[in-house]
Length: 282
Image 1 (cartoon, rainbow, N blue to C red):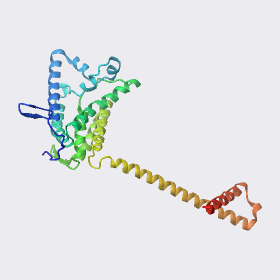
Image 2: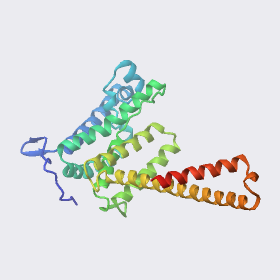
Image 3: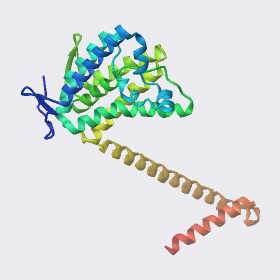
């Protein structure tokens, strides 16, 4: 089922033989073509081809192999099953995200999903963190699904005989993929997974999906209100303690005279007198 929410900017990139080619369709064509070409190159030139495509931050920083910033999203041929599932997700959910946000915003979203994590990872190279030639576009494809789940959180998805709403599928997949990466110490892949999920979610919020960024404003206001309430309660408690302390000192004076007061008690009494005078002046 395809939803009817459609942006005014939802229009084809170009036409081929009278058929409209949208951004998501073009991405599918590029991904499939890249997978096929990479598989043929590996077959005839050897697996060393993959070493030229994967994301290696040290190669990008020191050798200026900038194509790695986006070529890493090509799926290597040894994970063909994963590639099929990824293309299925991109075909179904990517089209609906593009339909909702429009051509320009979808291009910006996908570019952000691909480039922001890879640039950030390359910057880590300056701290001495090296790469293991990371390759695969799972993070960006999952980001597209998170964008869909943000737009249509209650949409029911029946997958493998399990029917859940989109946001619950997003939580479940994020949890399973996180555990899988942790189990095999795939920290780079884990970073890309969470990074792309966050980029997709915030990207949709910035576009006004749901309540937009009002949730952040509400959170800031709630924190501010709690802080003010805590400060007010603290002030009330301190004033109450000061009154009780003053009453005890006055009771001591009535029983034993002023000479019985210690220096600290005299200071408390003087502060109470000063505060009382200030209050009267108001």
